[in-house]
Image 1 (cartoon, one colour):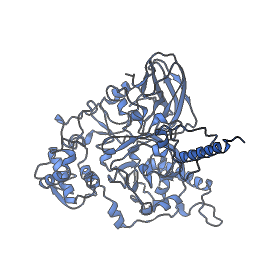
Image 2: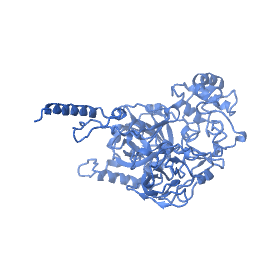
Image 3: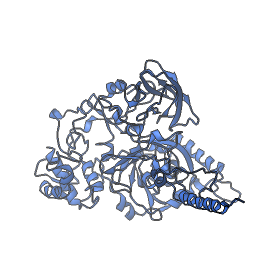
Image 4: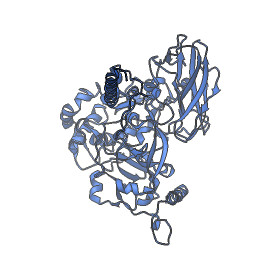
Length: 197
Length: 409
C-alpha cells in the first residue's frame, strides 16, 4: 500500500502486537511477522470465489448469462411477489415498486408521503436484478432461477415505463437501461464543524 | 427451655426451607405474584448460579417495532452509564437473524487483492486483537422527533432506542487488508452478510485504515446472534446499516457497488432535488433519558437531568441543558469516560419549582459541530428528508409533574 496513513496504522498495529505481548516467535529476531504478514487463513480458490461472488454492478459486471421477458415476469410476479407488493406493484403492503413523478421531478425531501419507487428513485437498473437475486422473494430468498430474476426485473422496469413490453432483458440490455433518478445522487458534503448541512 | 421451643424451632426451619425454595424460584414469577421477601438477614440466600439473572424486580425490555419484527429498541430510560447490556442492544435486521455454526463460518476477502484469502474464526482470533467502546445507531433513529407534530406519549426508547453502546472486540480491518495485499487501485470494498437478505454495503477503503474492525466479541463475550455472530463489520461512528452483520465476504473494488441498501434506502433526499448517497457519519446528538415520558415528578425539589450524547466524528466536548425551552442554556457535567465515537453520559442538577418547563439538551463535538434545532435541520434538508435525524429533543414537564415528549418548535 502507498497510503501514508496505512503505513502509520500498520506500524501501530505491529506496536500493539508487541506491546500486548502478542509474539510471532522467530528466535533472536524479535516479534515482527515475516514480510509484514502473519500467514493466517488459507488461499481462496476460484471456485469458491465464484460461488459467493453474486454482486452485480451498474456497468453490468457480475450479471450471469440468461434472459427474461415481461410475459414471464408476470407469471413469476403473480406467484412470488404480488402478495407483498400488490397487483401492479403500487399497492403494497410492503415497498411500493412502481410509479413515476410528473416530469421526473424529485420532490422527496419536500413531501414524505410520496413513495420512492424503482421508477422514480432507484439510480441503477442493475440494482433491481442484484437485490431480487440476493434477497427476494422474502420467504425464499435466492430461490428464483436466473431467467426468472431477469423476467421480474423486466416486468418492474416495464411497469415503470422504462423499457418496452417486448424487451428481452439480459446481461447487455439491462445495464443499458437509463434510470430517471441516476443523476440525482450526490456525495455527502457534511464535514463536521459549525455548518449544519 | 420454654415448652414451645421445639415447635418454634420447627417453624423456623420450615420458614427457612420455604425461603430457600422461594429464592430458587427467583425472577419474574415471584415478583409477579406479589410475594414480598422476608428479612434476608434471617434466611440463607440463594446459591450461586452458572448464568446470572436480573433481579426479579427489574424488567428492562427491548420494544419490538416495525413490520415483520424487523427491529427492536433499547430501553434507554431504564439504563444509566453508557454501556448497553448485550441482551438489550437494539436490533435492526433485514431478513431476520441467521443461525450460523462458527465452525463452518468463514470470511472471504477477494477482488483487488494480491492474495484472495479465506479466514476462519480461529484465524481471525490469532491476529492482534483490539477492544474499543463505540456506539451503534440506526440512521433512521429518531424520525419521530423530526416529522410533523411530536406525539406526546413517546419514551426515550420509542424516540431514540435504535442506539446502543458496547465494548467491541475484534481484529482491525487494516491488519486483514495488509494480510491479503490490498492493491493501491482499490478504493471501495463490498461488505456482505450471511443473512437471508445477504445484506451488502459499499465502504470506502480509507475507513479500513482509519478504525474499522471485524468484531467477534461484545462486552467481554462472543457477539450475540442479533449483533452478527460470529463476526461483523464495525465502522465506528458510521450508520448502523453499514456495519454489516454476519459478514461472510469482502470484495475490494475501484468503485462502489450501488446495492439496494445504499441507493433506494439509506440515502437522504434534499430539498434541492438531490439525494445524499453514502452519508455514513452520524452527526452529534444528545437525548435526555430522565426525566422523560412516562415519568411523573412526585413534587417540586431537586432532580437530576441525565442523558446521553454522542458523535460519529469524535469526542463530545460539551452538552448544554435548557430548562426553559431553549431560552437559556447551561453546561451539563460530562461523566468520564469521554471517548471518541462513543456515548457520553451527562448530568445536570435541577431544582423544579413546580411550574411547566421544557427540558432540552444540545451536544457539541470536537469538530465544533453543534446539535441543531429541528427547524434548522428541516430547513437545510427539507421536511421530508430521510435518515440522520439528530436535531435537539425536548421533554415538557407539566405543572402536575407529568413529563411528555416534545415542546420544541
